Every structure is written in C-alpha cells, then in structure tokens.
Amino acid sequence: MVRLLFVFTLVFFTSCASSLETKSNYVSGNPLTIDIFAARGFLTGTNYERYYFDDNILWRECGDVTKEDNQKSDVLLPAFAFHPNLKLENTGKELLNAEEFRKISNTAVNLFDVMSEENITNLPPPESLSSLSNAGVFEIRINYNGKERAFTTSLDGINEGKLGVQRMTRTLFTLIRGVGPVICGSQTFFGIERR
Image (cartoon, rainbow, N blue to C red; front, side, top):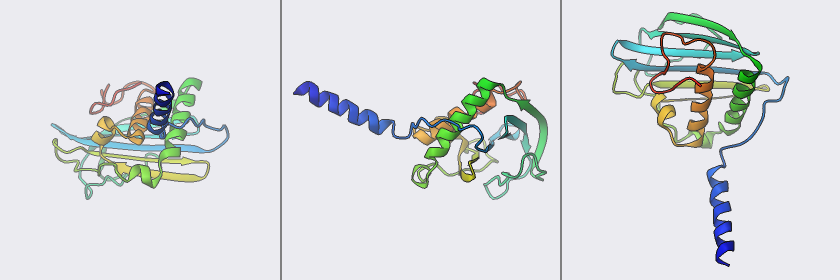
C-alpha cells in the first residue's frame, strides 16, 4: 500500500511539474517565423541583439540602443527595418543546416504551445535599458501556422527564470544565438550563452 501511494504521488508531481514541457514537433510546410529582441544596459551603454528566423534563414544583428523609448524597445518590426534608436554594429544572414532547423523549429513550436496568457501573466515586466542595475528587455514574437503569440519581459527574467515558459524561451534563445559565428564579440549575452 505504501509503495502504491508513493508511485501515485511520484506520478502526480511529475505530471504537474512537466505540464509546460509539451513535446510538439514542427509540421513541415506550416509557416514559422521567430522575432527576438534583447537589450540591457552595460558600462559602455546599452547593448542589443536581434534575431529574425523565417524559412530556414536566420537574420542576426547587434549593436547599441541610442535612446530609450518609454522602457519598451518597440522594435519588433519586419526583419531589419530601419529603427532610429538602434545603432547597428554587426549583421549576419545564416542558412540553417538540417539539425539547427529541426532543433530551433521544434523548440519554437513547443514554446508557442505554452505562450498562453495564463503562462505569461507572472513574467517580470521589462525594465529600463539605461541602467546597469536594471534587468533589461526581452521581446519575442512567434508566428506559427497563421497564429501569432508574443510577450515582453526582462532579459534577466529569461536568464534566471524558473517558470517553464522562461526556461523554454532561454533554450530557444541559446539555440538561435548558436547559429553562425559570434556577432559583436559576444560569446554570451548577459549570461545567455550560445548552444
């Protein structure tokens, strides 16, 4: 009886803990785009990285934010459209290999599946970009199969977060950062590495 109770308890807590860890896979032919913008204050100013994924191609850019825009970056525009607050330092365009495409697409679809209002409500708000002591901004928008989901939070919230949606977002960001050569000399971006 004790063993049965132990097994039931173990199964119950395991299922609760992994409720956000869905295992969806990208379905070939379904349109998928990912747009990520991350920025945070540093000693020399405010650094940013931006990534746009579409149709097996990843556009990348990095540089400095020259002026804060009401604490929200508001730069989630079509890929690499001109934005007056961004001082571009480096760009890149990478064609993903099959393994990179599979990992990024599957991770993005899994994240998309859990980007419901109830899962993003408790995320920390974005903070100022102009101070070293603030947690910065992280914005993500995923369009999958004709539907769009997005949220804005702090960069530190993604880096240090314990919620499932934060961990999944961090995983996707590290995979995307790992494509191609290092840009702007940043092997890590405020604690978020390349994978």
